[in-house]
Length: 412
Image: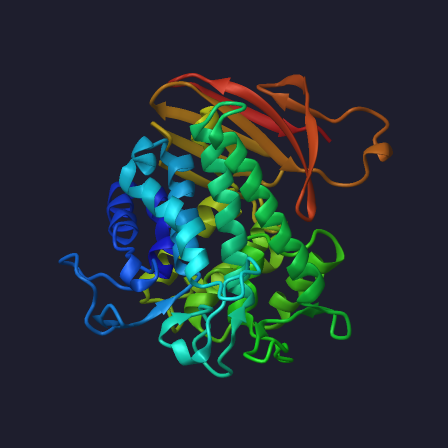
């Protein structure tokens, strides 16, 4: 389940969205009350649970972040493709059961946070981390639950109308997500070491050591508090390389997202090195494609608005980078970045869409003495600025017709 969720964006860039939907659906329909709303951790090519991880409904291997990880992958696939089947009865049942019955089954003290005693292993491992010490809960489980609630809230907004039950559910689950984030950023923060704890142990104390394979997911799902704590979490990630190649393959995507493009690109090149020890792993290969597309290129579609955003994250010594014939929404597009201040987009095939041309905005606004501008096809356009994670982004949105090529350049 974790592998498919992680590989899904790279697969989308390669035109494999239908295959991804099939696999995600197999996992979604496998949840069962008899397994406390867990699904099948691994499914073989014939559609059955892999015997290595499943004996019967009382004896099976399962990492509890998985339901939420699959859930967020489903929503990202919907945003990428606009495929409405991600809201059919099978997928919807999975989402609804996950945020209700699944959480209740693994929250014995009813405090809103999932956990599992080491005695329950391997049926209900409360982390993707599977080594010693055995935790009551991992920070990655909190992060996955937090992200799952945010995704569920967004799904309800897509489904419903203002004042409807869906709107009320959206508000409820955003509040649940925020409650988890507050607890993590207070209870799980170690002020002495200046970083987050990785594991809560069975006696409710915290493990003192740093476990990179857990803390990766906190950043991936956006759980750290903005500002000093996020910066500290990123510093820790850069200084503590995850020991497992599969987990390390998450790192470029995360660092690009938070604007740390130099180390992101360095780690991306390591994953691409022909001599990299994990090069033959499918998860690593797909993660590279995903990190190039969504990280280095900064391509982020939103099917609900028929919009595709680009945000170049090239390091200073990389002159240009391009992707051609990228399948996204109902389109096939080309994107080319010349450094970090110019982007060209071509709508090769498909209907018109809106292009949000974004750039990382350098320096304080007051230093320029004027409102920021982007040149769109050579014409000055008033742009908007937003603070996003650890960087400020300047953007302009414009339509791109079928067959049209448009160019945006950040005005110096």
